[in-house]
Amino acid sequence: MSALADIVVIAAAEAFRGDGEIFASGMGTIPMLGARTARSTFEPDLLVSDGEAFYIGNELPIGGTDKLVEGWIPFRSVFDTLWGGRRHVMMGASQIDRFGNTNIANIGPWAHPKAQLLGVRGGPGNTINHATSFFIPKHNTNVFVNTVDMVSGLGYDRAGQLSEFVQRNHRLPRVITNLAVLDFNSADHSMRLVSTHPGVSAADVQAATSFELVIGDDVAETRSPTDDEQAVIDRLDPRGLRHREVS
Amino acid sequence: MTLPEPISRAAHHLEKQPHEPNNNEPNNDEPPAVSRDKRTTEDDAIASLSDGMTIGIGGWGSRRKPMSLVRALLRSPLKDLTIVSYGGPDVGLLAAAGKIRRIVYGFVSLDSIPLEPHWRAARQAGTIAEPVEYDEGMLQWALYAGSLRLPFLPTRAGLGSGVMDVNASLRTVRSPYADGEELLAVPAIRLDAAFVHLNRSDASGNAQFLGPDIYFDDLFLSACDPGHRYLSCERIVPTEDLLKEGTFHTLRINRSMVDGVIEAPNGAHFTTCEPDYGRDEAFQKAYVAAAGNPDDWRSFSERFLQGSEAQYQSAVAEWRAQS
Image (cartoon, rainbow over all chains, first blue to last red; front, side):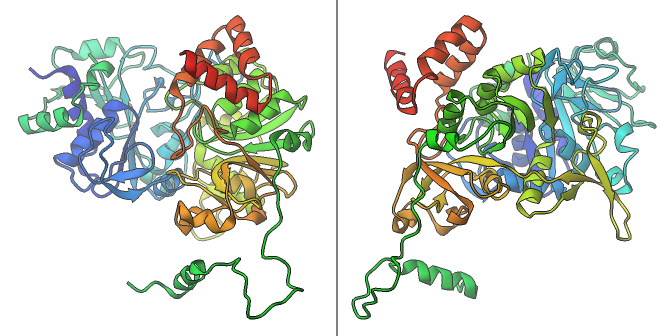
């Protein structure tokens, strides 16, 4: 049986399936592995970066330095690319609600936070311009909340009040956690359970979520990597850093 | 390959030796082909500033920050400052020293250590009177509008997000064209002073970045009124040596954007200054550990931050030898 981290990596890779020739950007080990695995297997047109300033043309392991540079992507070009819509980012979230509003900025009221986190960073611009997926290593009711304390990334309810352009371009394809894969493909774009990882029940996922999930009768088991995909994941993360993010 | 005409002309000029004396046509009336020497020191730069100024600080997170200027600012009595920054330890240190009244930021982070301890403490204690939190791209737009002398630039980034909830003064603007879309009008930022740290510069402020990213250093300088645009660098070189270490593409900052040049070897420490040096991760860890406890921070501050820049650098060298 596959390790949980390998199942999560392939689920992260699946988020980029069909994206074509755009920048697949992953924040953190598992999102980055997901993007690179997708490029090395079923989505070869993706562009992936070293997380610093270069597009990488070779299959670069996490932390690897033997880079084949195929392009330059300093921060200014990142903004140009994301405002131009040629990007799909997978990032973290300290809080997420049923419509996909996310928070990486602060816990407690913004004016006087209980815990200051990163600030909104690029979340507002990401979510309003292109596809944004999320990876959450610990699925629990402190993260999956009724209301986020600060909206760093727009959910479907907020995007739905903005222009027709925004509604066409705002997209939250996947939320991947240590328990399950979720999306927003429900009638009112509230969060839907797509699949649970082996050994996890739909009830387990609901119990770890503060709001009510859309749970149909078609909830699948998250697939394991194929042998070929597993070989790619092992090459991309020879030191097994992915197992430190989920286990 | 044939280059487009303007580029090939430029390249041709670069092959000439601009300062080569022309013995065939002696002309004593001609001024020397040397630009104004703008060299100064961190302390003189800081002494030219006043309370309440708006200061932009280049770099990004814990990358190529003008730390020697920030350290000089820490030693000064200046107060009630507005800081504009893609924040890293610059913001943390200034917050801990109580220098910041207002700050415009998209994040404050140490990169390899995601959360800045002093910034967290200041925000959680409520000691920053006026935090102005923007999306990262909005901050670029604010500086770009400032550098172009426009009142604002439109964008979608920020609309519908918490940025609108916590910045009551932000306004939207409607496209005057057929689409009629409502967009966020990011107000221009004009700076009273700007600090950036580059790899090389000549004495008049023609400066060069040799690392992977210029970040938004050119915008910080362009959005600043002339007078207090300070550029520190690892090494001041003769103008004719600027192209010895990098192509002409690295010359993104010219002397019309700079008022003072400071030679500050290791001046970005402990942040990155690729390719001259990487981040001093061990020292950054020690900084974070010390920030977690008032007594430890007092000793850290006494050991590293009370003296001159030269004393800082020798204290760091001594610390490194011991650890």
